[in-house]
Image 1 (cartoon, rainbow, N blue to C red):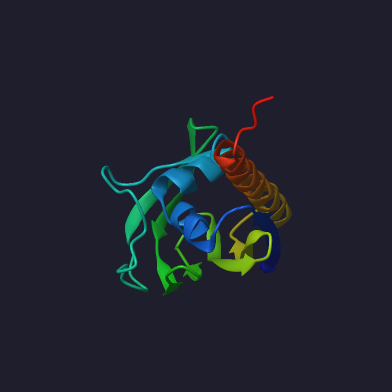
Image 2: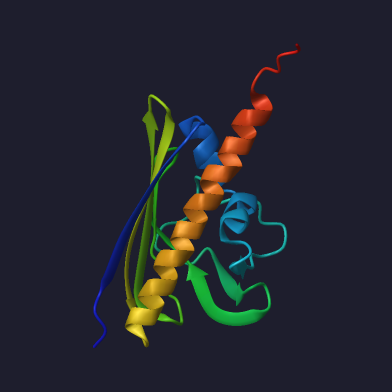
Length: 162
Protein backbone atom coordinates (compact mmCIF):
# COMPACT_ATOMS: atom_id res chain seq x y z
CA UNK A 1 0.00 0.00 0.00
CA UNK A 2 1.26 3.49 -0.87
CA UNK A 3 2.24 5.81 1.95
CA UNK A 4 0.38 9.04 2.63
CA UNK A 5 2.34 12.07 1.39
CA UNK A 6 2.16 15.50 3.07
CA UNK A 7 3.52 18.82 1.84
CA UNK A 8 3.07 22.42 3.03
CA UNK A 9 3.84 25.50 0.93
CA UNK A 10 3.86 29.12 2.16
CA UNK A 11 4.15 32.32 0.13
CA UNK A 12 3.59 35.92 1.20
CA UNK A 13 2.29 38.20 -1.55
CA UNK A 14 1.92 42.02 -1.61
CA UNK A 15 -1.87 42.04 -1.83
CA UNK A 16 -4.93 42.10 0.38
CA UNK A 17 -6.56 38.85 1.51
CA UNK A 18 -9.61 39.81 -0.57
CA UNK A 19 -7.50 40.06 -3.75
CA UNK A 20 -5.75 36.77 -3.01
CA UNK A 21 -9.04 35.00 -2.27
CA UNK A 22 -10.55 36.31 -5.51
CA UNK A 23 -7.50 34.97 -7.42
CA UNK A 24 -7.53 31.63 -5.58
CA UNK A 25 -11.18 30.95 -6.38
CA UNK A 26 -11.22 32.31 -9.94
CA UNK A 27 -10.87 29.93 -12.87
CA UNK A 28 -8.41 32.41 -14.41
CA UNK A 29 -6.21 32.34 -11.26
CA UNK A 30 -6.35 28.55 -10.93
CA UNK A 31 -5.40 28.08 -14.59
CA UNK A 32 -2.59 30.68 -14.34
CA UNK A 33 -1.04 28.93 -11.33
CA UNK A 34 -1.02 25.58 -13.11
CA UNK A 35 0.18 26.68 -16.56
CA UNK A 36 2.36 25.56 -18.40
CA UNK A 37 2.93 22.38 -16.36
CA UNK A 38 -0.74 21.39 -16.41
CA UNK A 39 -3.77 22.73 -18.17
CA UNK A 40 -7.00 22.17 -16.28
CA UNK A 41 -10.38 22.14 -18.00
CA UNK A 42 -13.57 23.54 -16.48
CA UNK A 43 -17.12 23.65 -17.85
CA UNK A 44 -17.63 26.40 -20.42
CA UNK A 45 -18.75 29.65 -18.81
CA UNK A 46 -17.52 28.79 -15.31
CA UNK A 47 -15.61 31.81 -13.93
CA UNK A 48 -15.10 31.11 -10.22
CA UNK A 49 -15.71 28.82 -7.27
CA UNK A 50 -18.72 30.44 -5.62
CA UNK A 51 -19.36 31.03 -1.93
CA UNK A 52 -22.58 29.07 -2.42
CA UNK A 53 -20.75 25.93 -3.59
CA UNK A 54 -22.43 22.80 -2.23
CA UNK A 55 -20.03 20.97 0.07
CA UNK A 56 -19.19 17.28 -0.33
CA UNK A 57 -20.78 17.06 -3.79
CA UNK A 58 -18.84 17.25 -7.08
CA UNK A 59 -18.99 20.77 -8.50
CA UNK A 60 -17.76 19.68 -11.93
CA UNK A 61 -15.42 17.34 -13.77
CA UNK A 62 -11.96 18.63 -14.59
CA UNK A 63 -9.34 17.09 -16.83
CA UNK A 64 -5.60 17.67 -16.35
CA UNK A 65 -3.41 17.87 -19.45
CA UNK A 66 0.37 17.65 -19.03
CA UNK A 67 1.97 20.57 -20.92
CA UNK A 68 -1.53 21.37 -22.18
CA UNK A 69 -1.49 18.32 -24.47
CA UNK A 70 -1.45 14.93 -22.76
CA UNK A 71 -4.36 13.79 -20.54
CA UNK A 72 -2.86 12.63 -17.23
CA UNK A 73 -5.71 12.80 -14.71
CA UNK A 74 -9.40 13.45 -14.14
CA UNK A 75 -11.04 15.04 -11.11
CA UNK A 76 -14.54 15.46 -9.76
CA UNK A 77 -13.87 18.85 -8.15
CA UNK A 78 -15.32 18.65 -4.64
CA UNK A 79 -15.05 21.03 -1.71
CA UNK A 80 -15.34 19.63 1.83
CA UNK A 81 -14.98 22.97 3.63
CA UNK A 82 -15.33 26.59 2.51
CA UNK A 83 -14.78 29.68 4.65
CA UNK A 84 -15.15 32.49 2.09
CA UNK A 85 -12.28 34.94 2.15
CA UNK A 86 -10.15 32.73 4.37
CA UNK A 87 -9.93 29.02 3.61
CA UNK A 88 -11.07 26.09 1.54
CA UNK A 89 -10.53 22.35 1.61
CA UNK A 90 -10.75 20.63 -1.74
CA UNK A 91 -11.13 16.88 -1.36
CA UNK A 92 -11.73 15.63 -4.89
CA UNK A 93 -11.82 12.10 -6.24
CA UNK A 94 -8.90 11.80 -8.69
CA UNK A 95 -8.10 8.86 -10.95
CA UNK A 96 -4.43 9.00 -9.87
CA UNK A 97 -5.04 9.16 -6.10
CA UNK A 98 -6.55 6.90 -3.46
CA UNK A 99 -7.13 10.10 -1.49
CA UNK A 100 -6.48 13.82 -2.07
CA UNK A 101 -6.88 16.78 0.27
CA UNK A 102 -5.79 20.33 -0.63
CA UNK A 103 -6.32 23.03 1.97
CA UNK A 104 -5.61 26.66 1.03
CA UNK A 105 -5.50 29.26 3.81
CA UNK A 106 -5.34 33.02 3.18
CA UNK A 107 -3.97 34.95 6.19
CA UNK A 108 -3.42 38.74 6.44
CA UNK A 109 0.12 39.82 7.40
CA UNK A 110 1.91 43.16 7.79
CA UNK A 111 3.50 42.57 4.36
CA UNK A 112 0.31 41.56 2.54
CA UNK A 113 -1.14 38.07 2.63
CA UNK A 114 0.29 34.68 3.50
CA UNK A 115 -0.95 31.86 1.25
CA UNK A 116 -0.58 28.38 2.73
CA UNK A 117 -1.31 25.18 0.84
CA UNK A 118 -1.45 21.98 2.90
CA UNK A 119 -1.56 18.79 0.85
CA UNK A 120 -2.28 15.27 2.05
CA UNK A 121 -2.58 12.56 -0.57
CA UNK A 122 -2.09 8.89 -1.28
CA UNK A 123 -1.08 8.00 -4.87
CA UNK A 124 -2.46 4.82 -6.45
CA UNK A 125 0.87 3.99 -8.16
CA UNK A 126 4.46 5.26 -8.34
CA UNK A 127 4.23 6.93 -4.91
CA UNK A 128 7.72 8.50 -4.78
CA UNK A 129 7.49 9.80 -8.36
CA UNK A 130 3.98 11.20 -7.89
CA UNK A 131 4.99 12.72 -4.54
CA UNK A 132 7.99 14.43 -6.20
CA UNK A 133 5.86 15.69 -9.12
CA UNK A 134 3.15 17.13 -6.85
CA UNK A 135 5.80 18.86 -4.71
CA UNK A 136 7.46 20.44 -7.77
CA UNK A 137 4.07 21.35 -9.22
CA UNK A 138 2.98 23.23 -6.07
CA UNK A 139 6.39 24.94 -5.87
CA UNK A 140 5.65 26.12 -9.43
CA UNK A 141 2.14 27.24 -8.43
CA UNK A 142 3.53 29.32 -5.55
CA UNK A 143 6.19 30.85 -7.81
CA UNK A 144 3.48 31.89 -10.29
CA UNK A 145 1.37 33.26 -7.43
CA UNK A 146 4.30 35.35 -6.14
CA UNK A 147 5.23 36.67 -9.61
CA UNK A 148 1.64 37.52 -10.51
CA UNK A 149 1.06 39.60 -7.38
CA UNK A 150 4.53 41.20 -7.56
CA UNK A 151 3.69 42.34 -11.12
CA UNK A 152 0.31 43.71 -10.01
CA UNK A 153 1.96 45.58 -7.11
CA UNK A 154 4.64 47.02 -9.41
CA UNK A 155 2.09 48.21 -11.98
CA UNK A 156 -0.02 49.82 -9.22
CA UNK A 157 2.95 51.62 -7.65
CA UNK A 158 3.11 55.38 -8.23
CA UNK A 159 5.49 56.35 -11.01
CA UNK A 160 8.13 58.99 -10.36
CA UNK A 161 9.22 61.30 -13.12
CA UNK A 162 12.74 62.68 -13.00
